[in-house]
Amino acid sequence: MTSATTALPDCIDGLPNIAGHEDEVRRAIAAGADQDVFRSAGGIDFSRLRAASAIALHMHQPLIPAGGVDLTSAAVIGNLQHMRDNQGIGDNHNAPVFAWCYKRIGEFVPQLIHEGKQPRVMLEYSGTLLYGLGQMGEHHILDALKTVTCDPRYRHAVEWLGCPWGHAVAPSTPVQDFRLHVEAFQHHFAALFGFEALGRLRGFSPSEMALPNHPDVAYAFVKTLRDCGYRWVLVQEHTVERPETGAGPEQKHLPHRLVCTNSAGETAEIVAIVKTQGSDTKLVAQMQPYYEAKSLNRWELAGQSVPPLVTQIADGENAR
Image (cartoon, rainbow, N blue to C red; front, side, top):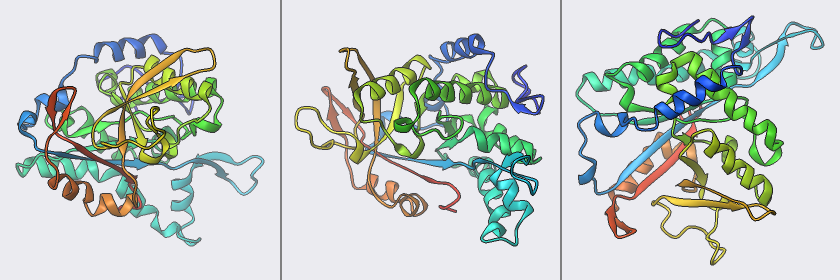
């Protein structure tokens, strides 16, 4: 399956296209730096906002050795395919529902926009899930996602977040491998949705919302994100602290700077959007961020009046 907006195939000899086009990827990210799709489209006057809410859906299925009865020779397939092919085991009967969960944003967004509404959502799909969907022939899901990602009528409503291709957890993944995961996702995303869409990836969602606490690993984490063109990262409220007090963020609905200094004294920083604590699935499914935002008013930041942002992320399958 090849996107109409890019010459890159999403698979090569049956394997995901996750490397080999580094120069094109860097050029696409640089070219998209000044895109203003999300703010300029949709008819929303952001200057008049009193407060705002943001929801993100995290979607992931791992690859597993399940393509055959002998695990030593079994083909590596997506977990969703294993569920679909073995629906009599455990809760595998949920496979069709999960598949619809991965597609439904591609259905909801056009419907709402045609009804005159202005939906907004952030999406984070792991590379293994995207690859697995294509591998099992669920191209209609990828096509629906491509529509809301690339069609000028809808693309302002869906903001994709970058992530590690294989759901690698930053604190326990060697820094050089983590960088390869980040770059692999960008490659694969460009192959699926095109270079123009790749240029709109600004935010990053760490797997399991995990941040490294070792200074050298934390520095490498932030430097990787900046080197790969990301402008902000989603962080968990209880995983960050204010350096002057050691306490958590006081104004958690405002953007912060995540600053990491390694043992050599080198510093890397990136804008951090704080995801507040709570039962993620229930908070997103019941639109708790929206109702919390309704109770807030504009705050002052660096001498400017800005709307606070209530942000939550949840597993998209569990919040169905």
